[in-house]
Length: 293
Image (cartoon, rainbow, N blue to C red; front, side, top):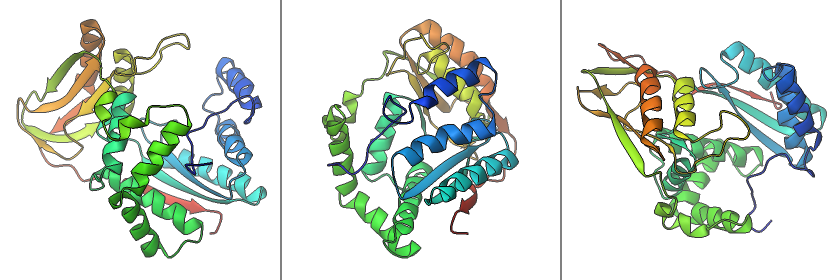
């Protein structure tokens, strides 16, 4: 309540049935059922009692929804659930055929989020965060789209957004000093840089494969009993559409063991595709749906 926001998940007091239903979906091979995905997501959103809900619906190789048709169906179902409960809801379909930011992992992604709030709003991730914040302000009736965009930008430049992040971290039992010193979020000791094998243009960065490689590094679980290494992950050195020369750094991997780097490297070499000509840029935002439409 002090910070005004929190990072939350399903608990014994928030949509408690969701955990049991997900376990059933797992053993019945219905994890990718759109109606059940809708129920899982919206049960938690509606249970919080919020008046305005903004949904970032990922679509592409790195998402549950691999194409716009399925993503649009999920968005419409979630909007229908929100409307039936009298809530204002907007769903934005965003591209997940390539990573949104430059970092994949746990501590390393938090570092990147802190960089955005420290003023790095010119990156694709930073621009997207400002866009979402402005849309929420507009939904809440704080002004026009243009006015809300300026308010969101001002929250970052004034330092107010970072202050709120520190309050949220402290309120949820974390170490708020990381907002002033992101290096407190340690990265794993073993690192290796993957370099471009030839000159060319980055034509694709396959999100699903990059995500799987991060799991091999220790940033995610292969089974529910696996331990997560908070410092494991990947830092990209380039994005889709960038030109690279042979020997240029493509990314850096972090892991606790050299053997993990070996496993992930083999997968990552297949995940970054080079072309002889510059590819057409794909839009980050595919489409938008709203209960107000």
